[in-house]
Length: 459
Image (cartoon, rainbow, N blue to C red; front, side, top):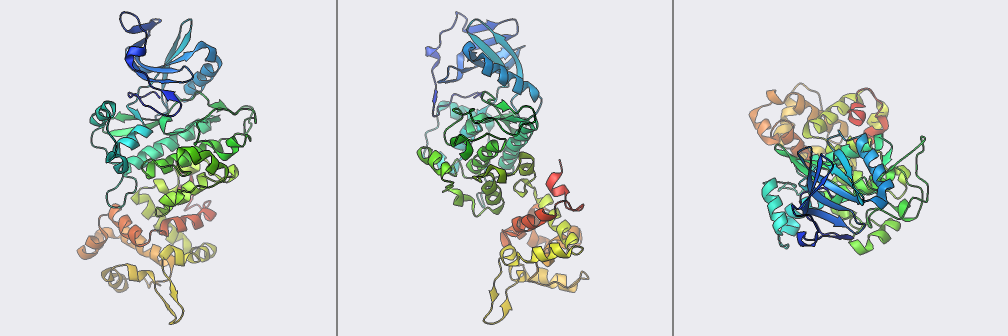
């Protein structure tokens, strides 16, 4: 941890300032640039690594003190940090210092880690936990933070940003051919920047760089990492690939969405459930289709089936309202020119539209039953063609029409669908919650189409 907060967690020992030996000035100077504030302890681990507040070239930093006996691992960490120290979603490395016993790394000082943030603002825990003085101070510093929406409990725009920050950081780590190998809430640090929060990947202590264009590490590189956050292949002592981090990422995204829960259960049972491919708590996000789809892929037991970090970054879970609606509109436009896409899209109608066929009276309950009558009447009196209420394409046409002609719509229609983008998206999402992910899964098969590829590989 490189954050401005002392935290207790499994496998770590938090110490008080009275247990730290220091000089008369409570400071340790390492060379001319680095100063360690020995009484300002952030964290100390069982491996002998300690984190202090300090300064480097007059900049306030976190100082990671590592035993010289771990010098090889420390040098690997420095090399990996230097590779992407300018990326906004990876903790920055400023410099180093050494003495007879220790190596000192000057790193970016953050406000807290993801575990503290979720614990502090979770509506589940705030009612039952006693806020420590450190966490109370943290809350005062961070201010009024909303991580989940009040109306449906889904991640707020801020939490979605932090989740996307984590993915962005992992993309750059993987682009450098580095496996992090220890992604967990305590290694995602949060810093307040201007009026918002930013998430950064930290602790590259056990990260490894793939060499010579190899896709995996050897089977012998095991025995570290954090219990409950390691992928099945690591627990079974198989080869380690970049996909290991994607499994941990899936657990992290689930952790954020569910106020701090883990998809594989409580601490003592996680490793057993991971080995058995039993994500027993995954049902907690089943009513959030985009999250359920992505996390299910990330937690696949077969690492070859997990998406790459860059693919995660462009998943609909992270799309804003404007992009979601534009995707519907562009898909509708493309369907009319591609019969195969049309047939594939219509095959999802029962699921996408949430409709059912009443065979005994030969009636199909179409999507018009879920849309206000005023809107149905308006589209039939307009000059934009006929609509078939059992057709997914025609529902997408309706959404595209409202999006394109919003300013021309009568006030009564605007009031029904709400504001441009956010209001329209909310209106149709509440009525057709599975529409986006079902259409997305179909369009994935046609993602090289010139009109649609921007939703899969745009940077």
